[in-house]
Image 1: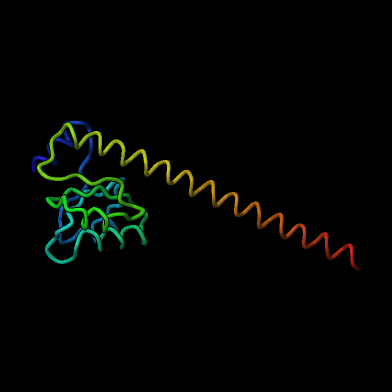
Image 2 (image 1 turned 135 degrees about the horizontal axis):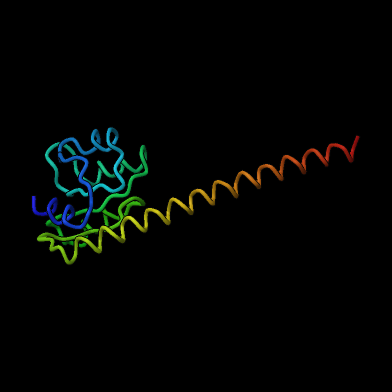
Length: 137
């Protein structure tokens, strides 16, 4: 509840809550960012974030009580944009949210640029194939 109020006080809209329904809510609501704990009732937050990344490409900010290196290492996934250890203060939460959203935006721009570049390369390959066929006829 405290996290919700901190976010709301800074103008963020909370579109859903539910640890045991994180994946379903992500599919239904398609939020800009998912805040998730590593330990959840039915599925681990790490597994849920893998599914969310693979299917939806939504960034995740982990908020957890675990500071051990093994948990941090397991959290190195493409869509995990931050890792906060509880108790979380407003002074650490808001900058982490801002940075997570910015990193996600930058990653999306890079993906789009890469896709465009790949399409241009493929088009040039097809053009070159066409020119090569004309030379040898």
